[in-house]
Amino acid sequence: MTSDHRSPTDQPASPDGDGTRVVVVGATGNVGTSVVRALAEDPAVGSVLGLARRVPDWRPPKTEWRAADIEPGGADLVRLFTGADAVIHLAWKFQPTHHPAQTWRTNVLGGIRVFDAVAAAGVPVLVYASSVGAYSPGPKDRAVDESWPTHGWPQAAYTREKSYLERVLDAYEHAHPGIRVVRMRPAFLFKRESASEQRRIFAGRLLPGRLVRPGLIPAVPDLPGLRFQALHTDDAAAAYRAAVARPVRGAFNLAAEPPLDGAVLAGVFDARPLPMPAGPVRAALSAAWRLRLVPASPDLFDAVLRLPLLDCSRAREELGWTPRRTSVEAFEEFLSGLRAGAGMDTAPLAAG
Image 1: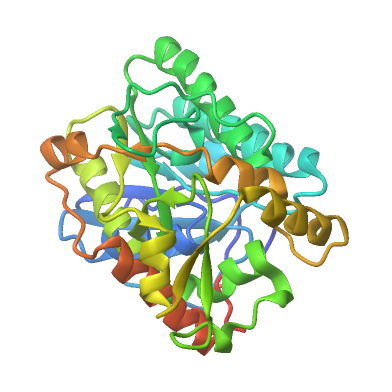
Image 2: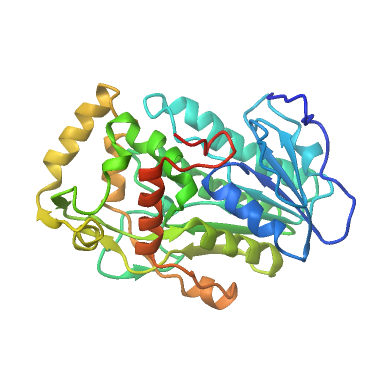
């Protein structure tokens, strides 16, 4: 169990104050910081309890922090959740990709602990961060709705774990019909403050952030299957806030337009698209990953080339949600943060 002298791990959500009481698990990362900020700005929310392995110095209004590890043997989650009106589960470990049993322990076993604690504590609402990565391979020429199969891409740990938790929640909803379960399935999430974290997670030291600017990259590989969607993390957070407030349940796709492909990315970098087969790129990535030069595995690369495009009609209709930024704007903001080494005053988002 993680501990911190400023924030004991065995205290429940504060019962003081009016309004909705929300616990955010994994509150200091790319999505968590945006969700906490959105909740803190919502007049209907009375208090936010942010859980993370390391308590940040960041102090948004109406928010308390507790250090908590969700892995087996970690924090007493039932006690932490007691008195909450909703739990939003965002915690996820992307690394080490060379040791998938470690990510499984946090993501799958830890996720199951969160789900079970929600039921044991009598929390009426569970909002879970699934992903486009939970979906089975799908089309690139049309968008799919939430009924598309969620079997993931079995070779990649990330998609395998996201898919497994979808099956866990299928059984969970049957066993706990009184809990309103919402599954968010967002596309790739970007914001300026997440740039340093995402560089560390996916690219490592080989990516020269300050050189990723228009005019300095002559060509962008235009690979078969390289067509994906993006979303600004703050726009995703607005959907999470709406899911807490509105009496909805089930899955929601979240993405902005337009899809990003070789031609669009070439325009972002003021470069030319270079059509080429995926094989040589995968071979280079595989070699770099095996040499531990990059942290992202070639299996994740395979999964990205197979992801379907998302139809977000349900989110628009039932959550009243529309992204404020395009996918290009979200990606360009991320690139700006990458060049500046941007971050936030939390451990996952530390600048550099």
